[in-house]
Image (cartoon, rainbow, N blue to C red; front, side, top):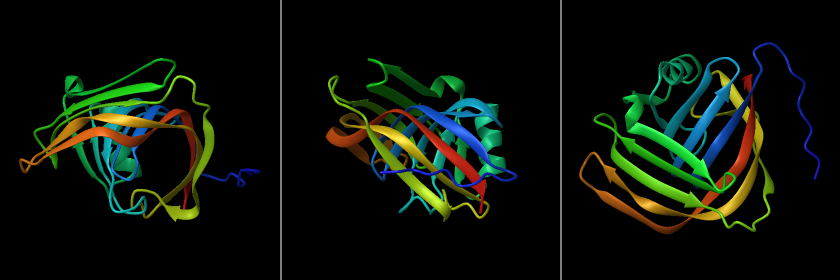
Length: 184
């Protein structure tokens, strides 16, 4: 399979995401490494699809500025720095996240996403030219994840009192991801 980069123009930025792990279509833990906004951690509650605005938790000024400038369509909540923690170990094959929030739909989330030590990463292209990301009216994203199939353990406590347990929930742990952000 060939993966050809579209031509770059004004406003194009390449970002790297690591650690990055997700319960497909639902929750994402990510450290965004952006040449325009710096390095910061996020916890993401996805919408019905990647073209629908997400709910994003950040714990830094850089993350808040990134969301306000890049994705104002999203519901963004800033929490204290100690209330959003993201770690990786095992050469990136284990990603653990914790979120505590007094705002937004999530009150507490704790997850550990693990990929087998002997798994070989697969190239997983995503996005595409002209497709909005997170409901953006201004940006599209395409990129490649180095994806490993894994499992998630943990729980999410919703602000409305619901508790959702994750026990061997199918998950993706990446050994890194890059995204090409471009104007729509």
